[in-house]
Image (cartoon, rainbow, N blue to C red; front, side, top):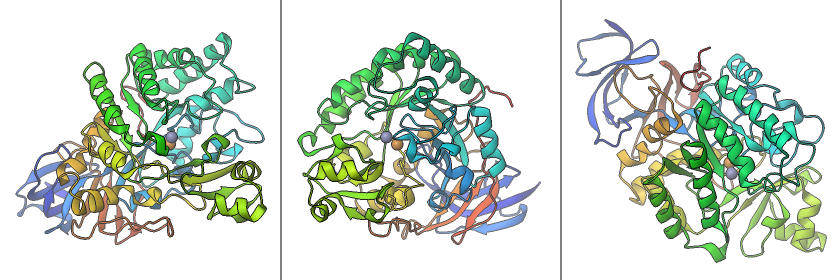
Length: 479
Ligand code: ZN
Ligand code: CU
């Protein structure tokens, strides 16, 4: 047979955690069709890959790319990292199903303006397919988005009737191909939701099939209680759980990762659960009064009423205005910020754990984004694996490929094997590294040489070639 593309003599890190080995890979149409000695085979195109590593395309399990996959379909921050699939709709906020008018509730404003939201999952899916992004997109449905569709105010638990409305729109979205439910229970507009409100929704996920991801109610003083709530909620619906960006925020809670990991392991012995993590000790989200602290730097990234304050420290803005930081924050809101509120030792402990997947949590519509948007995956390989020796390369790749595909139900992805989709990333191990920093956040990674999505070349030499991403519907959902 004649292959479309033959990748010759690459070191294959197949995503399963197995040791790398050198061989050839033949791609035909959208699949990997042959792996082995193929030196006499004919192919329309040949990539000489000696000295480089070929991995399954990376899967970014934690993103807010709902709208960037439609409006910036080249998906530069992602494809330049070797990412070939993004999971959108995390932290309780998704672009569908909801109709919005006027001011967009926090933190849904991280996704865009009111006309960036879609009344149905089908309309969102159509928009993604029409835009043809460079990477594959699979979508969660956000609890806060469901609330915005069913409730007139957020400062209370939902009524039975409102819960029924949310259950119905969630069910429709899952039947149309959404892959699960996310919550963001720490946020002001979701925290009045009771555990029972969330359980009622997770039950629907259990009935239809899918996953539950949660930005937990607390990542600080009651972290362990919040983890217990997450385990119990997922168990109630009999669904797999992913704890989003597991962390110990604020100085008083540093060091709690040891026990948090113990709890995760204990839970994993009873029920399917994992967590995701980005490789930085600073977080980023909207600015809210309860997040303000003088114990660490808070960098304002955007502000609706004061756009000129972006890239300034909250404490400097407060000094300039001669008010305290809480008052400064109040005047800046709605706004976004980067909080340097974690301990490096906690980040490493979570990152290195075998139940942890990599998710960037990047915020593509932020004008001054956290560098995780452009740098997470190459940073895990170049900084934490190669330079710091936190884990071996096959394990680093497993955390961004096969574990993620298995957990999120992405069939035939996340591995290099015959019959799998040809989502592939070729990189130079000696030079691979994040280019983005807190000073220059929108900088592409280095060392990612060639990326393929669904059998089409997506990136070479830093340039986007074809955009061949697909909307990935939940397994069993037929178009
Ligand atoms: Zn979050
Ligand atoms: Cu998030």
